Image (tube, rainbow, N blue to C red; front, side, top):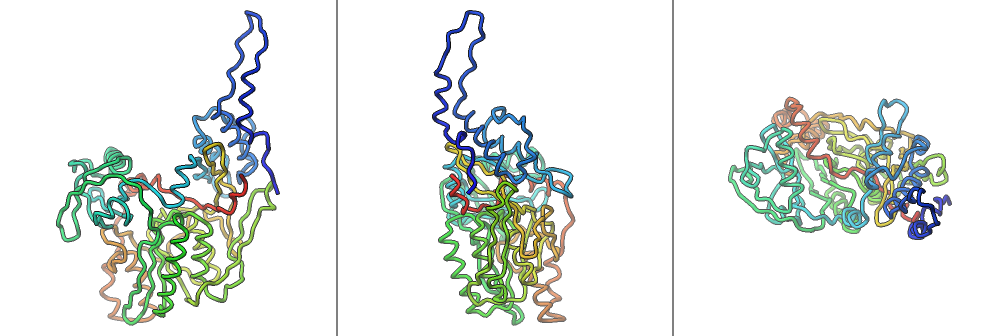
Amino acid sequence: MKRFPIFILILSGLFILGSCKKDKGDGDPPPPPPPTRIDLMKDTALAYSREIYLWYDQIPSNLDARSFPDLDALMMAIRNYSREPGFTRPVDEWSFAIDQATWDNTSSGVVGDLGIEVFFHDATDLRVKSVEPKSPAGLQGVRRGWRIVAINGNSQNIIASEPGINFIINNIYLSNSATITFRKPDNDEVTLTLNAAQYQTTPVVLDTVYTISGVKIGYLSFQSFLGDTNQIFNDFSRIFSKFESENIFEIIVDLRYNGGGYVNVQDKLANYLVPSSADNQVMMKQEFNALFSDWNETTYFSKIGNLNLPRIYFIVTENTASASELLINNLEPFMEVRIVGRSPSYGKPVGYFPIPVGDWYIFPVSFRSTNSEGLGNYFDGFIPDIIADDNVTKDWGDLEESSLAAAINEIISLHKTGAELAGRAAMIKVPEVDENVIKANRALSENEFKGMVDIRRREFK
């Protein structure tokens, strides 16, 4: 087993360096101050990265860890040394560091905020794109698709511009309290005061079975691979038992805002979705750098349940990332995969694991994943096969929501023909691209987690 240099791990004992003094003449310069605790943590973080980072041999020898304000800034700096053949810019956009208490809460699905994410439908139409059911917003009945017409009495700044984005972020995402006026689908307005609180997230947003023109279609909206894994696995068991008992013909998995999370949750979901013919076949390979090639690992499918479907539809956006893309990549060799969306998925075929440094964790990108065919360099994301908009004016599971309607339209076309499809065309028209809206929505989504985390590597403490 590889070991990191032991001298960098013993932080506390190094403080004695500053306590030893020698007699000096009056003209000698004062001795340099002893290294601080954070200095030694930075040294440790960089030493780890020089060994475990996927592109370890690109980190310059003169990089000074202590020149950065904190460990997160250091991890962001090493991103610059991640050149891949075929790409003109560094590919790593994800290495980071975070204090352990915050990560332990976030990774287990415990967060503290208002409980809503927002999204521009057009330049002056701000919508609720998602709501956590157990959050302050969820408990007051707020739903995806509601329009936001005023925040703290201000309606002028709800616009897809830089001042508007800053106003929204400061008053919704960075605020402990906000009074928001919503317009519901029936045009009734309600003003609610939301006070930030801690709650448990709910990754499974919706699961249901539609019967349309005699075709049974299973639908699962799953929006994070992080959270209470016991609850997630219980949900999977319940959902797929229902899908089996309903004898579904097709399945749609909605990952449109799923930024990823735990690899083992991906493993579980893939084993429910893959056909029985893939049992005991290679699901994926994890590959580390040359220094840690003995950590390379192959995972095999172990089919769960009796669901055997010929194809699967994934709804994606550019916020579909990492473990979500891993799921798509791992299933492609074994069943027909159809991708629904307007733009390619995020593009993150690499992952990491938490490494403790003091009271922080560092996450230098440390492995890449490939499927059974050796494919996995999808830094440009997965390109949709079926073009459809993310219609944020509709709630989850609404059959008139554009992406869901587009998937169902193709499914029905495989089973039925003619007039049964005629009424669905208007639901899936793709509106013109507004670059200001795209830019605004990217800014609103910038701080959402996007990662592939393998907790099996936590033994490297």
